[in-house]
Length: 369
Image (tube, rainbow, N blue to C red):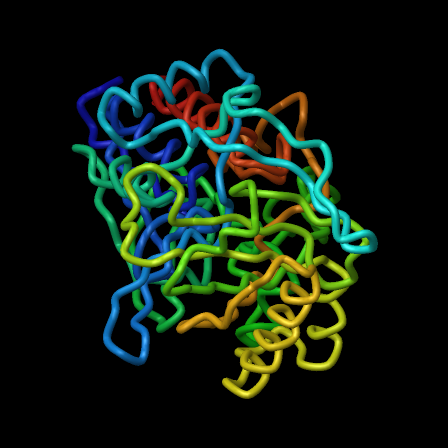
């Protein structure tokens, strides 16, 4: 690489964007990472809440864990383990049939390695974003990405109209950068005009997603009638998953905390009535009551929690993979990479693989400038 400072913008600090930013920085690229939220993580975020009596509570309210099959990703996970960022979640898991109110497919501890971030799922993204060569811009949403043909550069503008700078390359790790859902939420056109990347437009046009509600619960006493710490739920129109978040390594045991995930069908029924705008407190409370009522109807002696709050994931979980072979979408002439779990596979491992691929494409291309 020549002596000219090479600048790349990474939009989105979920695991795909964070891995990509870290990899680029290790290869001598100057990275600016933009994230509209207050901190990194995406659906690996950790939620901090305070109960009515002042107790601080934390929840992994998005992805509860991840598994690894890819050798390159496993190498990264081993490195993260050595740094204390990741640990194996050694508990028993299974499934629960809501029609018979019985557990089945009980899996013994260690059969499948499930990994979690420590002390929260967002620990990995936090650490990657803080590595040398990565400049972090949290609370800064990108409103417009413009290609300057005469200068052979990208120009980024914030949602507030602020000039965010010029960059030799861009990695978009947030699928909403081109999605009509961006317009549904903000009332503005998506930041990336697909006319700039016509050869990618067909794949990016409207990536289907699976919406979900998460319910965060905290109990004063353990739910001792539940014999396992995480389970898929079948034959329920409302619930798809439940796990004991406080059973993960590195978590506080001051209270027992559970996270429940709704079905796609339930989430869609709520969104059909409310749209994708910010939900009212009344709607969130109603959702919380409905999801908790379904949990209680399992007959598992669920006591009343001292904390209960719902969160909507409107478009976090992709329903398809658009670049399984390529692992990311790549526009060579404009040095634009699109990366995320929606490219490879709809899980954390897929997001990591895609982030690595995007960094590789840009590193190779920028070394020739």
